[in-house]
Structures are given as C-alpha cells and as structure tokens.
Image 1 (spheres, rainbow, N blue to C red):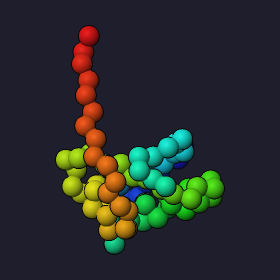
Image 2: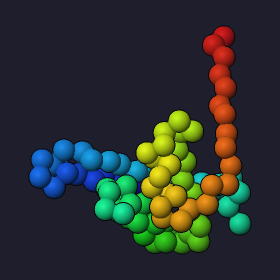
Image 3: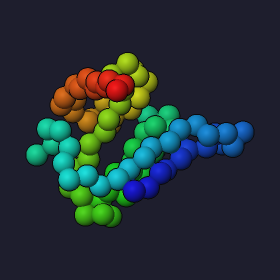
Image 4: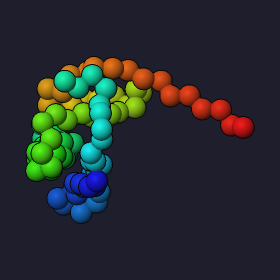
Length: 87
C-alpha cells in the first residue's frame, strides 16, 4: 500500500491524496487538477507492482472525486450501496 499526496505549490497545503494498494479483485475489471496527477502517480506505482489493470472507488455522492477517473478514461463499471447495523 502507498499513500500519495499533492500539495498546493504556493501554500504547501494538502491539495489531495490517493491511497493505492493491491487487491485480489476489482469489480468488473477483465487535467490540471491535483487529482489527475495523483491518479497518474498511482497508475505508475501499480505498473511497477506488475499490475495490468487499475480500479478506482469514489463515494456515490462525491461528484468531484468521480470526475477525475472519468476524465482519465476510467470506465464506470458498478455502483454499490453499503449497509450497516449496530448491534
């Protein structure tokens, strides 16, 4: 696993992050903004791990986080709703 961060050039403040890691599967797998650079860095990391595909997850209500992979030609392959119940 790796966590990649992007900082604002002028202020040095955190501008974005992406967490990458290897999984045994990903559902349906066979820009000037920091997100695009982070995704490219994540793809580079994955290639170095020997990966041939990349998956990306975003909350269904987070339109900003969904725009980055869409702009980088990731295919929307699945939507998921998670449930929980306190016992």
